[in-house]
Amino acid sequence: KVMLCLNAPELGEQFLFDNVAEHCPDCVFQEQLAPPAVFNEAEAGKGLKVLIFTYLPNAG
Image 1 (cartoon, one colour):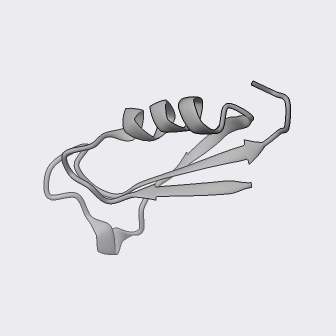
Image 2: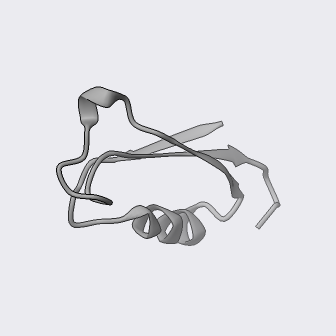
């Protein structure tokens, strides 16, 4: 399992998906975790992003 976290308001989840596809195509998306309440978003879509992938060699 691979957990990717991004806390850059100017970047969305697609930034993570694009980088995984380019740099580690053997990772397969599993789920997105909701951030804890302490990371409450001031602006929708601008908060902490947490994505879980599974590494499956030769999947890509």
